[in-house]
Length: 169
Image (cartoon, rainbow, N blue to C red; front, side, top):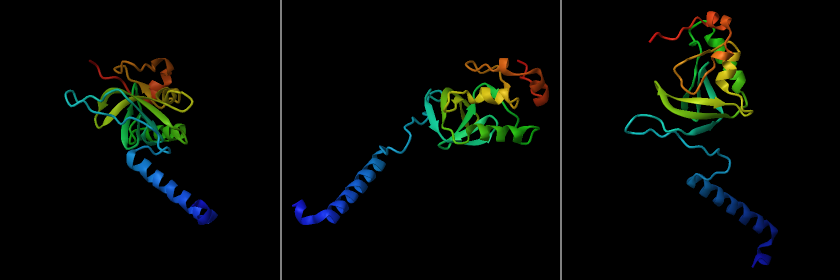
């Protein structure tokens, strides 16, 4: 039978077959071009986010907040100035430079902060994104995050420069 179709006919059949397979993969979520990640799932009883991983390219919102796949993520353990505060825009653009062209892997802690999930985020090379911001003197350690301690990376000058103090308990 294939002898009667000829080479152009076989090529057309292969192209159509490939398009059908691609369509099936897209509809079942098996597209090989997409990164496989687990979206955050909210526990309806506590409102907490289950611990999971989100990875992909990110959009930088400010010096301590990014978005991956439309999910806003607050970096655990640090505080950077808001955009309308001194050094706020500088912190955002430093974060943009760190993340440019990188896949970011966010390990959700299970906590939420306003409309964001909280996560420890890592660059492709394994560097901790929050630690890099503290090293750049554009973010400070926040003591109330249990699994994130960046105080040892701060300089006395960075705390004076950013003029931030943890709230008294």
